[in-house]
Image (tube, rainbow, N blue to C red):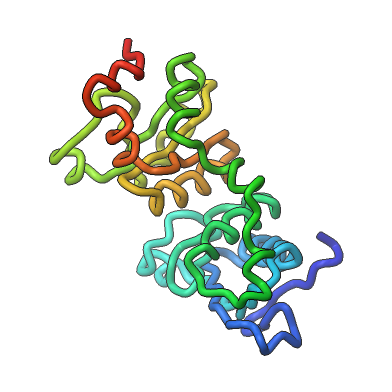
Length: 228
């Protein structure tokens, strides 16, 4: 990372690319950790053509708490939490690539922002999940909030609401299995997967979400899932 620029307050990277849309990267945390995360993001930009960021920093504890920050450091992209902790640069690239799927890009830059191989390293299809689960090599983690669980829930896997993941890290590590994070679709589960990966846990999000999984296991096909 020695060749990457160190972002400072208000700096825009990459420089000299006024033709690209500008996005706001707001980092919360102490000066050391936000500087480390900002530099990793700056390095990641080399592999994210089409992305242009303006860096802002907030170091006060009260401001962080008011913004809902739970970890030091945390990066908000255009007002949404995107990165927590200090994931490696390669992981940052993947997280941004996933997020960019929902951002309009120019025809010139869009092909460079889609990397199927990288996507396969952060998500898992329903059929592959069922195979690994039945072999005892994967565990499902339902990250929905209690209000959702009261309406409908699964009779397998673990139920850990996303805000409670930090207190279950050791529990998940000790399973010795691939952690498959799931919510009704994939928006929350992908963010939760990124957090777990930043903590060194082998995790993917369930492509198709819980709704897709329930559709796959409808009727007699439910027998395709082996329960204890």
